[in-house]
Length: 383
Image (cartoon, rainbow, N blue to C red; front, side):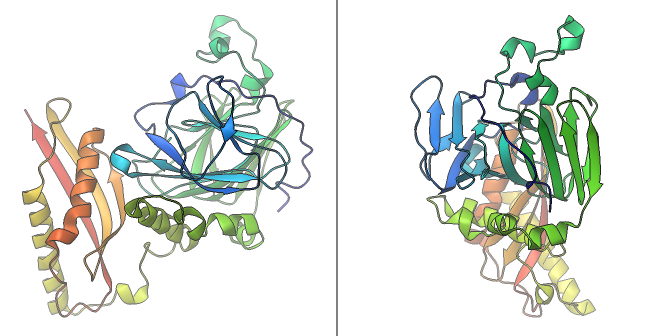
């Protein structure tokens, strides 16, 4: 691929805030945890304090925290995004390596350099309202909180070059992006994203197999490429998709398992995470009937034993989840496919499903698979 080869980079100044407030809503993660580091001189900075060396296991949980990856073309940091209650927020981000400095600022802003990121399939995901990708040039905060055109203000170069990248649907996303003061490129390898900017306030769709380029003078171009070939030719992407690089840190096992399932699904999007053809066998009519009864009883048990917290207001609140139940009773690939809109209810539903092992009933004897796909709906009617 030519996306990251012919670009001449410049040294970046430290990145100022790029108008965080309009970007962040209910999808803000509670923390992003460093799960892997490579190279040296990676720094973690809080506010105006002196930066300290970044360490595996460190968490960013405040908007005045930033991770700085030097532009030595070697160093990188991998971050897993966490939700409330120590749950996995369905977003992985790698900052670097690149020939210029890359700075990630919690929760959803990156300045300069190169990133690789993936949202897993589902709706409840960290930074789902967008990752802000800036140039690294300091931008006055007051000029980015509203539309400068409405106030008669001229666009600064930093604002003019800033992009916001967000998922276009609930499908899994895999992409790479690179930016400096004069050039930006976004490469979508899986899924579809929406890109918004000062030039495109309504946004436009970039689908898998498309690269978007933009120069500082406003010139733009979109080209096509083969995503499978791009991954096969890139050791960097293969390393990104390797679960070992994300799960050997001091991360709680349920989160590590969710990360592994996320990456397995990306590596083989044609299959449900954690399954293989023998896990989804052709069943006889009688066996299918037994499985249907088993699933109905399972869902009834889950519904009867759920003790949800109070919703934030009267109404009907519904959380839809999917997961794999293994023959040993473990829950894998647990995902919210439709959020209720109330984080406390969503997290209660996830916690309830994770406790399923305590109530596990063996599969029907006729079922030959090693795992069984399950979908559960948790509804609260509060008056």
